[in-house]
Length: 144
Image (cartoon, rainbow, N blue to C red):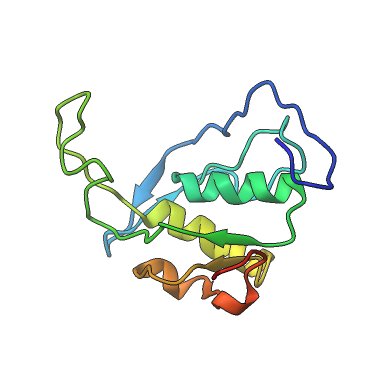
């Protein structure tokens, strides 16, 4: 993993902390138990369980020393199927996306690192309640 101008990091494997279960609240939201959210300092440390690739991408960006992360393609829309549809193509079982765990992790991340993660234009959903939108003028690459 490398960011231009930054030190190269050579992880042999990325691991994610083990979950210790959780509980469903009366309002239907899921709350995990165990260690609260965190961001590892190196790629050799276990990543905080976030339950979504967005959470792991943000942890990777912090480890690499990025100044800001621009998010594209994440909505965290609860109750929908995954990108491949409502049926898992491998198991042929119905899938259901539960965004409660990643939403909790993202709220923690946004409070710990305000303004670090910015949504690129064109996406909506519950994630807009957590991260601000980026403007095309602020992007670090040409938009023409």
